[in-house]
Length: 174
Image (tube, rainbow, N blue to C red; front, side, top):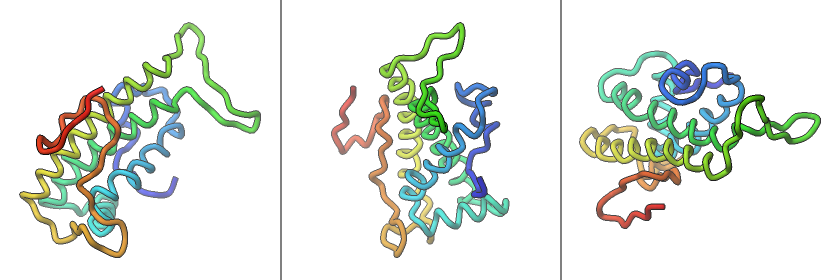
């Protein structure tokens, strides 16, 4: 995978329930997908590209570094794990689609996987809410809600479980 990722595999295994022996190739795609489906719409293309370039070249400073370390990385990490939990037991190979069943272990039910996934999506949603408050206090010229590429949006939700959203909007708890 040639593209720069906001979260390195060691950060995933050291700070979440993801085991260190999980094949990295199994979840790198989830990190890349979250960057494109959650982080870019949250920041907008201009700010996303600025943060991506700065993170890749280790040139972020000030508010940009704070945005990256305090919001972009945690959102990416937790949402990537939430998405990986949903597909972690499955594999598609030349021989077909399989459900992995390790010895001496019980496979989580679909409901249990959803519950764990929602916990991590909820954590990601909490960071999204914090970002929305932060960006109001730290206006960045690259943060644009109207641009030629992907517009920045304050309506990002990750279908998480325990998310205590904006008090001005009704929140449905499952």
